[in-house]
Length: 242
Image 1 (tube, rainbow, N blue to C red):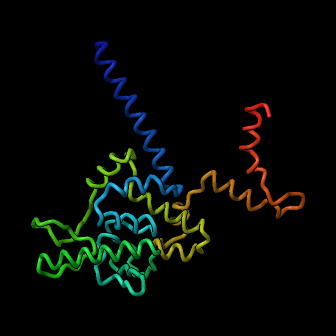
Image 2: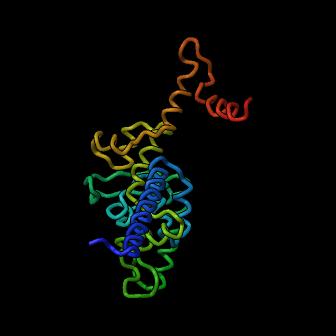
Image 3: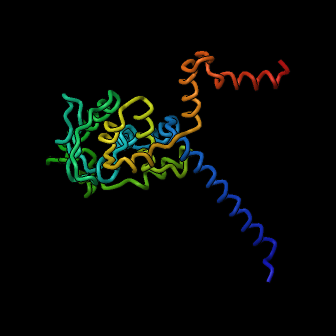
């Protein structure tokens, strides 16, 4: 039996909305994986201060959120040395010491101060770096996840579908692209095998263009300016008749 016209319209509208949402998610996914910082910062601003620190650690170093970031204790942080120590209880069963960037060191120091203030208010020891705050029964206990807060922040920032686990791909790309040796990058992100590490290192068209720029001038007959750099100007000239 043929559906009524109103029902057919509603089904078509839902399909159109779903397709648009999937397309938007793919745009967000590509921007995050390929290391674009703006979408991440837009979402981060909409999170509470403690969660801003957590996602920055994951974004910068590729830490696993639930098994590595949210399990951190204050004893794992050395503010004087500027390091955090991930213990053997992580997914790879190997401890590792990570030196913090200036931004991360500043954020972690502020988070330690917030936990110390919470500890004084509760009148008891709070060992976790990312405990629940507030005054409820969970105050001071370890935060195990924050999916609802993350989803809300993504939707408010116009970036639905951004996944925290994608930050591991972002971190791998960023580390390799700035020249960090791959064995060192693997130690930072906690990848034990090269095959998994390579899967996370996704090559973008921009990477291929940058390779062409670096090759320019190293081959006889070429110059230090790559033809890649001239393509946008050539298209502009063609469009204006110049």
